[in-house]
Length: 523
Image (cartoon, rainbow, N blue to C red; front, side):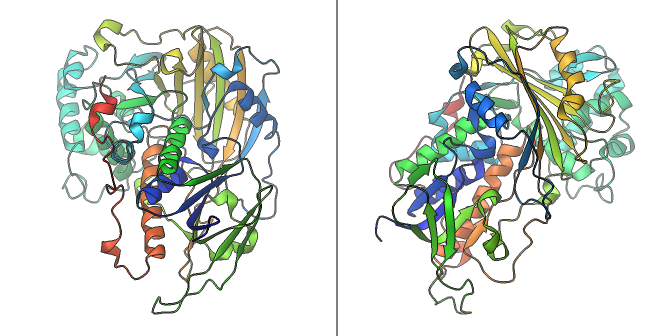
């Protein structure tokens, strides 16, 4: 195999692609990883402030008016501050802010791959919810529930009974049978007699439902993930990464892939992707796999590989019908949204503390990041149908200079109408409590339909990963799950005569062991 030939070429350095590339390289495949952007992370990138301004200026109009639905994420910037703040390179700003569940597929990939040692992490501060006109802290464990004097004793007992149920294997339980698809709030009332206020908190600050009518089974699985994450590294079930989070972590996986021999090319436009052999396969799998050729501007000679793995944004029109989609599991991911209204704001100093908490009791392991949930209808001038999430970051996670803070707002939508600024301004005003932001950008993120890549009838060695659904709590777990499915597809394509059960294990150990225990996250 010459220097321009690879087992697989990965197009795009989004989180899913980066995890898959690291696993494939660790399994011994020769990997080329390409991104036309000059930075890692793609739609999950972490940018400096000046890079964010450049990014915003290239997305000031929407291209959704084309004749066919887009198969990739599109953006439309509705507003950007004209001023540029000093020390712009001291900011690490995420295009896809998220937190990390302490138990789940993503944290397992971080530790098993050894990528955890490339970053730093702290606990998310206690979550708060805006309910009945005020901000309220959400109890994090059984003890804090019984210490909360606002909850009647009988309601506390019902709540604890529900939490014990939700933390277990409830799929076959009699309480759930026949109720899997009913709205979650109805399930809480019918099966556990929980009052409206408690059910509201469970729905939006424990299950983190984006809409009032989300199904019970999906919501219960999210509750279980939150409960099982409590106590692993501290009271909080969630961690936040330094330097902007997911974009920095994607770069960590790329670094791990490079350590295992992967070739990286960033900032070069993909000028052509071609297939040098038919995309069909003999029935006995003994034929020669098609050879894919990728040409890059400014790179002499094409790159060749027997397999391609790509994000949807890099699939050329001429090959749309030949790709094999890495299908997600929609039953575990809730109702698919069409768009997300987003805002990134920078403010002077630390944000006002919306809920009083004792730093001495929280301990040193906590970050300066907090998460605030606005359920549907919680603001009179807010959305009556969608919840809004506010995630903050600051110098404590090396995301901003010592005297500045970053505020991320997001709202999932089932309709593409409206301006992100009009939708999110009321929530930003509620969080800032009268202070004015120093810089802000509002933008819409449009997602492709779920059927953008239907299953193909022929076996393909050109695989496309699904678009990550915008989920501030579970998107990183979904990225790890998608990456593992992609890993297995590529390994099976490279070794077509191997039985599926013989395919290399995800993150199988090769060579010197990487750090794979909880020491990377101990506070």
